[in-house]
Length: 138
Image (cartoon, rainbow, N blue to C red; front, side, top):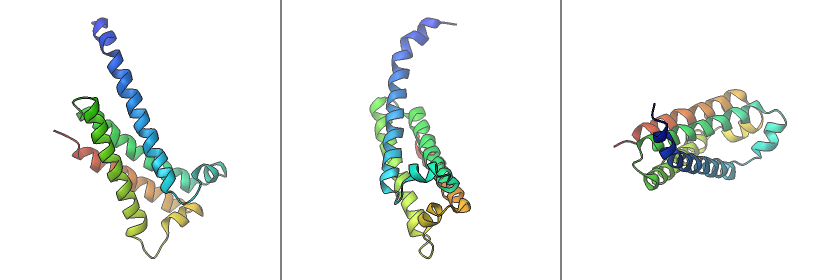
């Protein structure tokens, strides 16, 4: 085991980690901005549907970020691919939540505690994240 290799690359590891965490925070904040209710408040009051939906959105972003990290050739490449993938995640989330179900307000259902809808939307976010992540490659 060559410990010097790990010490030599520790700085790059830390930089990629910090950038990925910042991108995760930015994506989570953007999702918060487009959510018509206070997720924090509803989670504090025990709304499991909101928790499931939020966890799914966050997991979908993490899947995308890990793929961007794996396939990036440098830090700028990581940032570009991550932003593209995060934007696609957000757009697809909006299309699914508001565009495909015109007769049912899914956001309202989650806000009202409909666990099935929260799980569905969270799960779809993960699945979309997997598809988007798979497209990030060279």
